[in-house]
Image 1: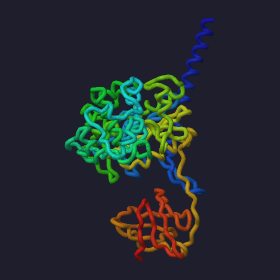
Image 2 (image 1 turned 60 degrees about the vertical axis):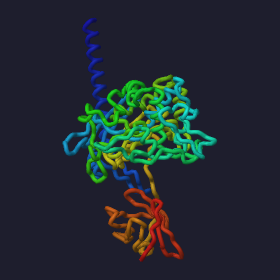
Image 3 (image 1 turned 180 degrees about the vertical axis):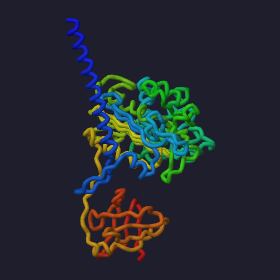
Image 4 (image 1 turned 90 degrees about the vertical axis):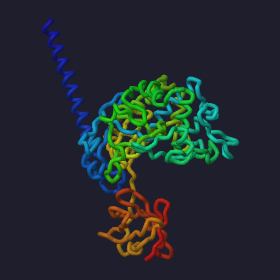
Length: 475
C-alpha cells in the first residue's frame, strides 16, 4: 500500500513539474510573438500590416532602451527589458532599471489627495485656499463666482495655466514649489485664466498646487508622505518622488536621451514639480498602481483608497479624464513625457490585465507599437491601430499639387512626384515624407499619419494646412 501511495505521489510531482514547464514554455512563446509582432500604429486599409522585432525597432528609431511589465489576475505575468539604460557606460536596460514616469506621477500622487479627503484633512469641492497656508491662488475676475477646488485640479477643469514642465538640469538652481507657482522658475506663473469648473484644460500647474496643499496640511515633505502613505503600501518600495534623485539610486537609473540620440544634460532632468512629473520607478513597480485600483474596483472592497473614492475617481469627466487617471471605455491609465523619457500605464476596468511601458528617449513612438502587439496577443480591447483608407490619384492629377510652398517662420516645402507618389521635402523635413490621399484634398504622411489639407480653387492648388499652420504656394 505504501509503495502504491509513493508511486501516486511520484506521478503527481512529475505531472505538476510537466504542467509548470508547459506553462513556462507557453508564456515564453507568447512573449516571443510579442517581441516579433510590433505593429505599425498607422495602417492602410487593404494592406497587410508590417510587423517588427522589438530590438530591430529600437535601433531603427534610435531609442536606447525599453522596459515592459504585464500583469494578469493581480500579479505580474512577465517583465522584460531591451536595449541600453546608458549607452556611454554600456549599461543594459533591466527590469530593475529606474526611469522617470512623467505625468503618470499625477494619478499616483492623486491617491494621497483621495486618502486625505477620506481622513477629513481635505475636501474635493472646497476652495483650495482654505487649505493652502504657504501660498494662495490669487483671486481675479475668473474666481468671483467659482473657485479652484481639488476635484477640478484632479480632472483638469480648474481653469489653471501651465500644461507641463521642462525640468531642470544638474547644476541649475532648483526653485521652491512656491517659486514655481509664481513663475520664478523656467515656466510662467500658475494662475486662473478662465472660470473654474468650465471647460477642460490639462494643467500640470494644478497638480503642483495639489502638491503644495498636501505638504501644507501634512507638515512633511511630499516625497516622504508619498513614500509612507502610498508607494510603500502598494509595494512600490523601490520607487521615489525625490527630486533631485538621491545618489543611492544613480547606479540603477536610466539616462534620458533626446530624439537625436544625445544625453539629457546631467543624464536626467530634475522636477521640483514632483506630483506633476517627478516619480522615479520601474514598470514592475508602477504596474502595482493598476493592480491595486483594479482590485478595489472589481472586489468593491477598500484598499489604498476606499471603494467609494475609487468609483468616483474612475468616472470620466470632460475629455475623458477622471479624478487622477484618464478614463477610456474599458480602461484607465495615463501617459508620461519627461525630458528624455516617455511612458504609458494602461489597465482594464473589467478585465484583469494591466501593462506599463517605459523608454529612456524623447521618442516614445515604439510604445503604441508594443501595446498593439500585446493587445493582439491577449485579445485586449481599446487598443487599435489608426486605419486609413486610400484613394488612387493619377500622376497627371497629382501634378497640380507639385510646387513650392512657404510655411511662415519655417521655410519652403517642395512637393514633387517620386516613384508615383506625392512627396514633401525641405531642409527641416528629414527624411522626406511620402503622402497618400484620403480624398482629392486630404493627404497624410504614410510613415507618421500627419494630415495635410490642400485648398483647391477652380482646380488649382493654392495652399495647404498642417498642424495649425498654413503654407502658401509660391510657384
